[in-house]
Amino acid sequence: MSTNPLPECGVARFLTLLEGPWATLIVRELLHGPHRFTELRSALPRISPHTLTSRLRQFETYGLVTRTAYAEIPPRVEYRLTPLGESLGPVLESMAEWAASVPDPAAPPPTRRTGLAETPVTSRRIR
Image (cartoon, rainbow, N blue to C red; front, side, top):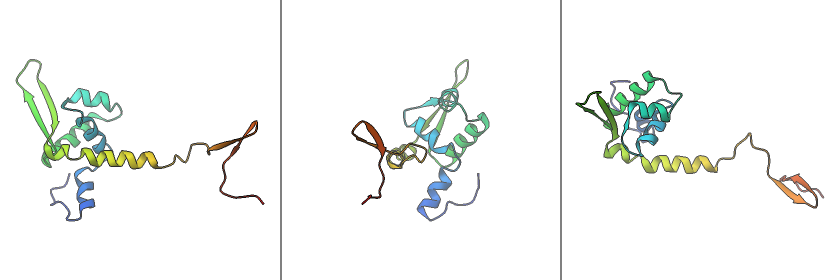
C-alpha cells in the first residue's frame, strides 16, 4: 500500500481504494454484515491469510472497514464496513448486473429448433 495521496480521477481513486484481486470480494462478504477473520477465510477459501490481512488493514486505513477487538477468551475480532464502505453496495450490484449481461465466450452458441433437429443460430442468411 502506498502512502501517496489518492488520485483525483474518480476511476483511478476507486481502483486505488479497492486494489488487488480480492478487494471487491471481501467488500461483497462484508456487505452481509460483520465477519470474523476466519469467516472471511471460509467465504473466500483461495485467499491467503497474508492477503486478507493486508486488504483489511488497507481498508481500515482508507476508512472503509472498522476492526473491533473484544476482550474475551479466546479473543474475538470483527470486521465491519463503515458507512463509506457500505456505500459500495450499489457499485458492486451494478458490476454484477453488467457482468451477467456479458456473454460467456466458452458457452455453446444458442440453438433454434427446426423440425426434429436443433441448428445453431447464425447471423448470416442463406439465399
